[in-house]
Image 1 (tube, rainbow, N blue to C red):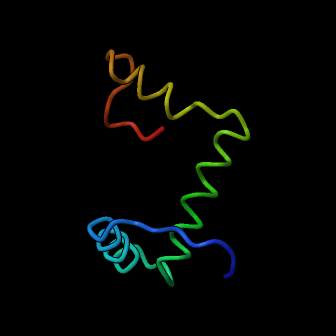
Image 2: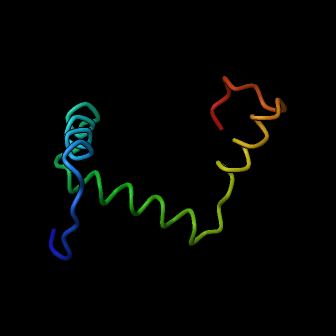
Length: 68
């Protein structure tokens, strides 16, 4: 992987490293790239499903136990 570098505060970096270990990513860079790609895909596709489901769940229309 090449390209730009970003800085994260130390506490966040420790959390990223722990998540990478637990979730099975090959590196922190792979995890960060995956998260960025997923977030960009949401906005590029206009997908607001998660946000809408969260709002509806918050007012009690969707059982909080459902995975939408």
